[in-house]
Image 1 (tube, rainbow, N blue to C red):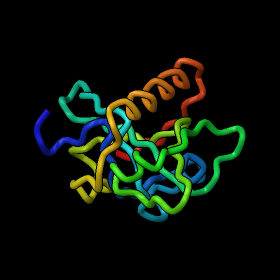
Image 2: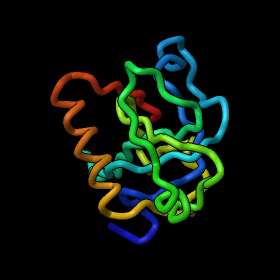
Image 3: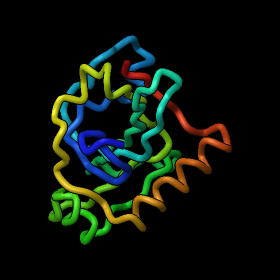
Image 4: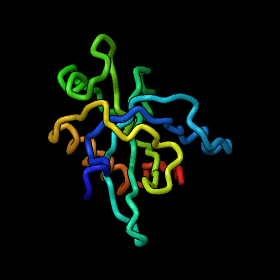
Amino acid sequence: MTADVPVAGQVFDYHYLWKWQADRGETEGRKKRPSCVVIVVTNAAGQHVLFIAPITSKSPDKNRSALPIPETEARRAKLATDVRLWVILDELNADVLEQSYTFEERSPRGALSPAFTDAILREVQRLRAAGKLRLSSRS
């Protein structure tokens, strides 16, 4: 991967499109929010597909899968430390970097630790295997 391709664990300000918004036909995220790159894969055309999870200060419903972000991780990622934050794991945006009109800011605000990023990825993989992962394609 080249230096300008995001990597797992990096946090960006991103116009995240919630699945319920996409299901209503919306194509734009309503506001920029901190979001975490979960994994980057290369598609058959050689393009980089980013799978991006939203970060929120709103306490997730009991039927959602989310991981609370410890204060140390929030500091690493340059997130607010005076409020409780969660990374939502049961829905992701899939965005092709080379075609993205939403991935505007290419400099990360910070990054989560490799151990915390691995915990996020393991849970996303578990949800995918269980058929409980929802995706919104952005490209």
